[in-house]
Length: 140
Image (cartoon, rainbow, N blue to C red):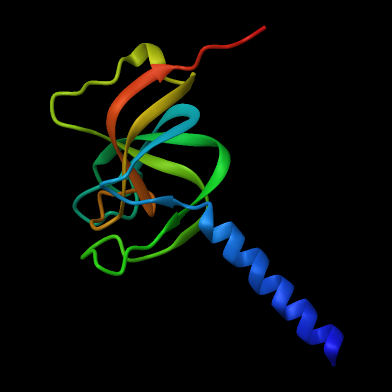
């Protein structure tokens, strides 16, 4: 019985430690590294199938180098949910911030703020509003 209690305590401590390393939603500024990709998703009118007549909507996505977790914020209206093992983030360029086609399918670093999905146009649970998008410098 003592072994079971000790194991449960260790599991609880380990999960608490993992949560302490989670990223935070806006207004916290974060940096994410990964590969910038584009993908078509079904849009109006049914949001279910491009091949059955829905308009294709392209989304910019960041395929992360490492999974992240994001800490929910109880005082927020939209960012209350914790998310773990996030490997794909929808990139939401801020107004007037265009992302060059030259960065597509390349390793980039995006600096910005995270927010949780709130509409059908948001293609992942976690999104990033971009502050900057830079090509990741490779070291040899």
